[in-house]
Image (cartoon, rainbow, N blue to C red; front, side):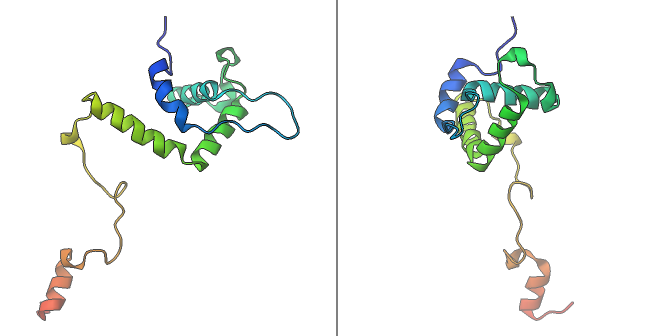
Length: 131
């Protein structure tokens, strides 16, 4: 049997981070629950399939439902909070090798003039030596 995309213990940690789906004022089909939507999102992102090819047999709703939920959760900041929860969980389990961690411009933005003492030209200008 295949391993589930979203194990129950992980779902218990993620569920409180997700906003509850709002009822539609005009009615329509009932919205899928958050766990089904997240399973569909994980399947598409992990497999690399286009949204249109999300299998209906998975019970994750249609591709647009999952895509909209992904968009709405991004706007609500869910993924940033989820990232922190997963980092804490992995750290507690000793699964993060901090010796391999590094900072770069993708994680720590460099700002012009942020640290003038680090620039050799700035030191030269302050000392009066123009060489």
